[in-house]
Length: 64
Image 1: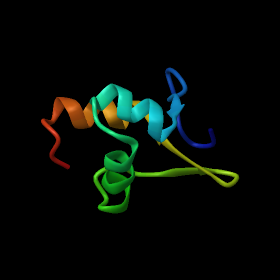
Image 2: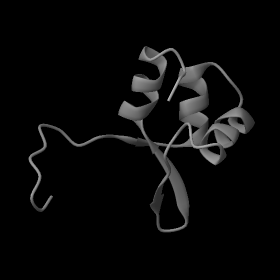
Image 3: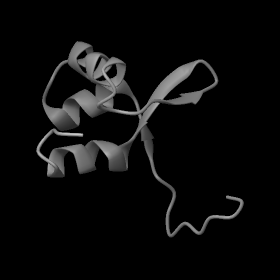
């Protein structure tokens, strides 16, 4: 990581994994990504979400 210090790599998770953490459907997670509540990281042609962002959103009470 150029110019950045990282203590650990942030795990990238799928919509299904995020849905399980939130306790919602994958459709809801996709809607959250579309509406800007969750940022998407593109890995080739796959959409992934940073696990830390999911956990932070839960800690903020679902508000971005």
